[in-house]
Amino acid sequence: MMTTRQKKIGLTALAGVSLSVALAGCATDATAESDAGAAAPAETPAASSAATPAATSSASSGDSAGSSSGSTYKDGTYEATGSYTSPNGQEEIDVSLTLAGDVITAVTVTPEATNPNSVNYQNQFADGIAQVVVGKDIDEIEVSRVAGSSLTSGGFNKAVETIKADAA
Image: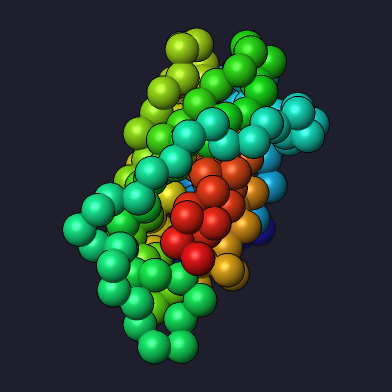
């Protein structure tokens, strides 16, 4: 028969394990598996193969003139629009990256979606992308999922490819 102390220890251990599992499920990692029971099927990995190329791009004028020695890309702030196809249709996302010595020093993502589900996913993506890419070499990033959003990642990756071409 278990004593009260043994029961308390067992329940405390169980609560700790449950908390660990819950926190691991909240992690925003670029390679995290899809969340079971996501709010809506608007962003699924299967549909990401239908992504289309980035639509527009532009580099800001003041920052992009300089270049760090040994860098592949000119330092500066660059902007591009990436598009992708979701179950709700064609969507776009605006991306602004600041490069210094080929390293991303700042990122801003502006949601441009028209469907409410896509807007929700793009907002979540925008809130979590800096943690994934800032401080990394632009040639080493390939975002697959951020904050539960996988299709938005496809649009982001298309915009990054356009930025790389502009900054070369």
